[in-house]
Amino acid sequence: MLRAGIWILALAAFLALPHGLSFSQQEILVFLVINILLVASYRLLTLTGEWSLGHVVIMGVGAYASALYTKELGIAVPLSMLLGGLTAALVAVVLSFPLFRMKGFYFLIGSFAAGEIIRLLWKRFREPFGGAKGIKGIDPMPDFSVGFYRFDFFEPVSYYYFAGIVVGVCLWVLWRIEKSPVGLTFHAVHWQDKLAEASGVNLRAYRTLAFAIASGFAGISGALLAHYVGTINPNSFDVEVMVFVLTWAIVGGTATFYGPILGCIALTVLNEIVLRELGFEQMRPLIYGAILIASILFLPDGLESLVQKLLRRKAAPAKERVAE
Amino acid sequence: MLDLLAQTGLNAVYAASYISLVAVGLVLIFGVMGVLNFAHGELFMAGAYAVVALYADAHLPFFVAVAAGLVFVGLLGLLMERALFRPLKDNPLGGLVASIGFLMILQSLAVMGFGVRMEHIPPVTQQVIEFSEKVRLPVARLYVIVAAVVLLTALWYFLKRTRFGWALRASAQDPEAAALQGISITQTARIAMFIGAALAGVAGALTAPLVSVNPHMGHSVIVTAFIVIIVGGVGSLEGAVIASVVYAVVHTFVTTFFDGVIADITGLSLMLLVLIVKPTGLFGSRERA
Image (tube, rainbow over all chains, first blue to last red; front, side, top):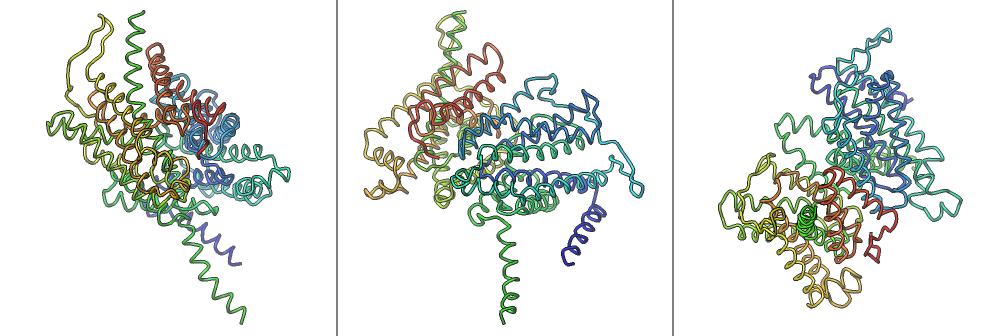
């Protein structure tokens, strides 16, 4: 009963949120929703213990693929997004052959190198990737109507609802995966790799699976971005964006499903509301850097650890009452 | 054709010089601290901006500016050791993540202090050594080559022939055993950070009049340095120098005969290949990660 109530409240908040905000704030909401999917998919990858530095480039693979499918092959937009995600997953499977010969630190560097190679390929080949200038005039999502609401994608609010629904479905799928036996195996691959292997778990296959799934959802988030902004280029997916994703994940904490999402929301709010309104926009990397350092020094388990502390404090007295 | 080969060879020697300064510093820090310093490219950038501030803006002599850059960036290294790496000693990914944060701070400070535009630095010297009509070596590049040879020889002497050097290598090999022998790990960490950072700073300072100085110049530097230390083996100083030469030759020749982007792709592919075939690098023996 209580849970249903929370969900209804959350849905109402999701629907009501963009109203009363300015145009640019509504646009920020769209980016926030897309980034939530990106960082949540990143967490699935970290479940198996690997920290990739190529995740944003994989997101770009989805963006480029979806943009090119609509432009060159004339595939309709929502379908192309799905195909973009699939393409990103496929690229991840191909990359897994060299990358999963490495672990830990080497994987980090290897994923960085692989990502840079992909970005340089976009830059080098004007056909079909558009070179350094990238792809312009990407088809927008076509308007449609569902009876009581008309999606007019010239308005950020409509795109926010659309992206919100897509991301919501993706998050639900990610959540189901994590709670399924497959997801539990991912945990085992990270924390008990020797034991898991001895029990007949194919470590390599599960690592690849996590990498492919995470990449697929990152690809979808990239496609959502591409068809909203209309222009993408190799610099849209550079290391700086990767550092932001890393910061969200670390500030939020990666031990829980909601941790990275919490980090993403908290930093976006800080960034867009506090910094922009106060006119500190130029200092964004400085403040992000300082926050990254401060959180790794003083809050290594992320914001989620604060939430858990709060919840436990509330739960503890309740337990005592039961004991009495 | 012979002229072109000779000229490209000279360019490669120059590139190998500053790359090896950066890479050796990175390896030294990794060896002693166990931290991959992502901010190393920004330390290079800080050295370049020291020259912008002192030589181009304040009109001090070039070599005074370079020396000041060396000390300044070395001090930045000490700051990183004290504020970031020492508290995060027990967190394997922590130091790396913190160095990414430090990188963003340095970049942002450069933007605020100097603006995002490329800096114009007056040439230090217009002199050129002419080997033949088409084979020329600008003296400014010769400075970089000489500095690399001198500094790396001095470092080699320091590490292999002095007591401090012994202590440093001991604590890189086995910190606990070194501590039990009465070596102060904190002290060796400080020395390693100072030297490692200062080498990157001096490389940036010396090359500042020869490259485009901007707040984002560190990116290509760190990518190059990563390639070099992976190819050379992350724990090996000699490997880093040899790999710098290999990389510089490959990159310079591919740039001359194809183009820069293909050269970058070649370099990164080389690194991936080494990671796949022999992750300890061509010259590394011991794994530390």
